[in-house]
Length: 69
Image (cartoon, rainbow, N blue to C red):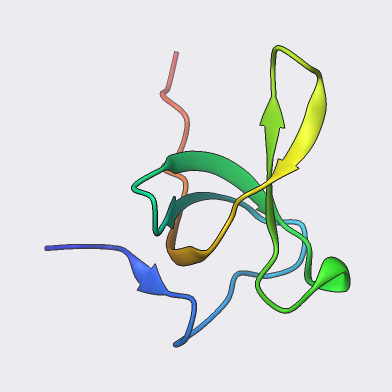
């Protein structure tokens, strides 16, 4: 069973952190920013410490809950 949600069916809430899948097969944790465009997701790059836009996102899913201690 897949939990992926098409960006054509529904989008996350603004500022939600989600897992995003793009057309190039890239899967990243990203933040949804509707103020930058209808389907704009931005991933944080640990090396450059900058946000990078996820190109052509097709699907997303909520992040799982963090583990319990």
